Structures are given as structure tokens and as C-alpha cells.
Length: 196
Image 1 (cartoon, rainbow, N blue to C red):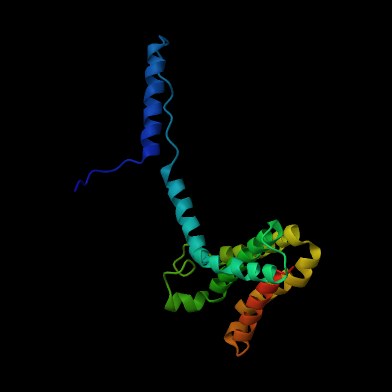
Image 2: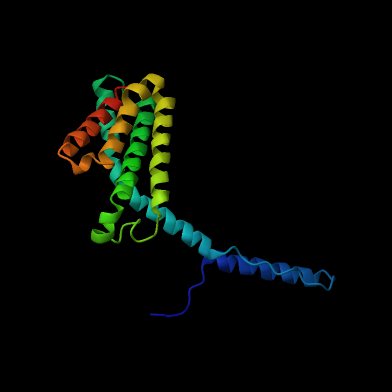
């Protein structure tokens, strides 16, 4: 197995472009070399990828695949089908689910520091304030998508109560005997969201 350093393709391409530009400047008879241009800093892309991965872990992105089924069941029960409205409401529910996951980690950050230090907040990959901002932003996105897909009545009757149940559960209800009932209400409201 070779232990040679592997140079990223983007870095090699940028170095080749710089070398070609320098040769072209020397060959045009001007006698002055082209200014040296450095390739983009490869660490920036790596940091962005790590941050994106940390946020995907924070919101438990793959688990959101379970959410559209609730909305679809509600839409089919109401005779609505799977048109753009239903897809929009499913997207809204995914945003609210992700908001709940981010809010859950924010609310449990001290417990996670002791029991799950590899999670994004205790490990320092995401700051608590950023997780709370993500939860708020995803909630607003969920409400906005629902407004576009289903209108104001859907937001007031379906999406807002669902968002309230998500926030109530994460900010305290889960630690009480009412926790399972609030979670059941959130899943029920998600099915009703599809009837919107």
C-alpha cells in the first residue's frame, strides 16, 4: 500500500491552470511572468462538508423518511390524493420534524454531554445557539411551506398546532407523564396535517 500524499483533484487542476498561464505569459514575449494565483483554500470545502454532516446528524435527516407517510395517509383518507398540495404539506412536516430533532438536542444538551458526548452539541461541532436557531428557522420554514401549499386555514388549523406540539414536547412535556400523550398528539396532528 502506498503512503504517498494524495493531492485533491481541484488542487491539481488549479496548479495546472497556474502553470499554463505562466508559460503563456513567458511565451508572448512580454518578458513578465503572470502573477501567481493560488487555488481556492481546500479546507473551506472540507469545513462546509463537516458542518453539513453535523447538521444532518443534529436533525437526524434519514429518519425524516417516516414523516411523509403520515401526511400521505391523511391526504388519502380525506380523498385529496398526492398532488402538489400534499407534497408541500409533507415537506412542511419534514421541516417541523427536523425542527423538533434540533430542539430536542438543544433541550437535552447537558444530558447529552454526559451520556452521548459524540452528538453534535456536546462535541462542539454545533453551538447550542445555532441548534436553537436551526429549530426556529425550520419551524418558520415548515409554517411557510404549509401556507404556500395549503393556505392560511391549513396553517392555523393544522400546522400551527403541530408546531406547538413539537415545541411543547421538546421543551418540557417529554419529562412529564404527559410526554407520551403529547408525542401521540404530534403524530396524530401530522396525519391531520395531510387533510389540510
